[in-house]
Image 1 (cartoon, rainbow, N blue to C red):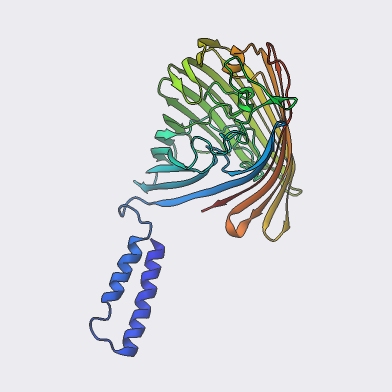
Image 2: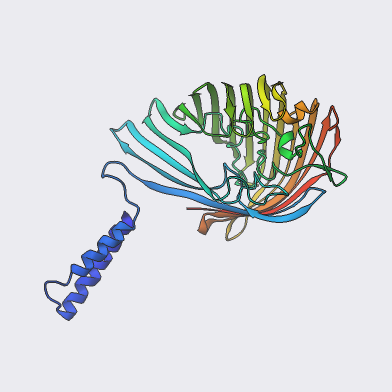
Amino acid sequence: MKFAAFSAAALLSMAATSAQAADLGGNCCADLEERIAELEATTARKGNRKVSLTISGWVAEQIGYWDTGEESNVYVGGIGGTLSSHVKFTGGAKIDADNSVGYVLHLRAISTNIFGVSEDNDNSAAANSTAVYYSYWFVKNEKLGKVSVGQQSQASDNAAIVPDQSGTLVAANWAMFDGSAFQLSRGGVGVKDVFDTRVNLGHASFCGFVGLGTAGDCTAIPTSNIRYDSPTFGGFSVSATWGEDDLWDVAARYSGEVGGFKLGAGISYAETTDENFTVGTTFNKKRSEFFQVGAYAQHVASGLFVYGAYGKEDNNSIVNVTGAGAQPFTADGDRFYVKAGIIQKWNALGNTVLWGEYAESNDMFGPALAASGVTGSEFQQWGLGALQQIDAAAMSVWLKYRHYDIDLEGGALAGSYDSYNTVILGGLINF
């Protein structure tokens, strides 16, 4: 709107000067008014004079080399469902000094989703699609907090991830965004489960809470819910959510600076009980509990930082495994992740971040492996990376290497699998 007003003022000024010089008479402004109308029609405008509108978002894409031990290639694609390119419409209106209302409409634009591609498919099922990610309204009181209603993240979503203030949260976190669908092999030969389906990385990094191989990101999918967020007191805040049929959770967060250290922390507990739940896996009856905690510390003067996260999931569900009907799924697993590095402004572009990371998932095997006789699993990963922030363009670019190893226990699938390696060059620009 400000752009339209500025443009209109500039055009009016130029038109007035031109009219005086050429003495064009009384009809000099007809063309100008038509042009102003065209400019206003192509400018983002608020729907009325009471409620504001802001458009923001980001575009994120990657070039990824992968090697499964059986096959290797290079793909170009997005970062995953949660972190794919987004556009967000937000706004609100003040009722009085303490009370306001607002809304969020957040659309997700998926090109090729690296989370869903594999050796056999360089385009995931959700490629070239746009979907509603968030759609909710809220009421906020400055002293009492905010209540939101609609499709949105539950309070526990990313509770352990968000404390990471290193600037590498998108490029490197504990979620299984880079290659969940890539298939495992032993000695360069692919391996199938009891249902004649290829075993993939996601099968050994499975979250029953969402029915997908998302590793530690077990409460990642937005739900239709009612959410409460408290005001922030001394850097602390609390949140809680209830969603239908039935999901509830609680979370607490902290962010602040103490004694020359930048600190962040988050903790949450979530529980879901649902019947006939389907996202990636169909549950006849689902009961999952997930606890997570994450913390971050950075020495401001030196730029040295360390971040860690831990999550534990307990399952007591009945899952519909393709080809085998309803079966119990009671695997209880946990995952921990640590990342450390340094942040320095070594050039005029912005901060440069160097990091190393390590993660391990224990017994986070999915229903297909459980039905195939697997009784235990160990999923290890480590990596190195560098990220450069470009402040003038609100952009980050990164280069990272990751190495994955998987071991399974029990049944015919027991044993060590070929390592999986990736080298990824990525970039994200905000708008």
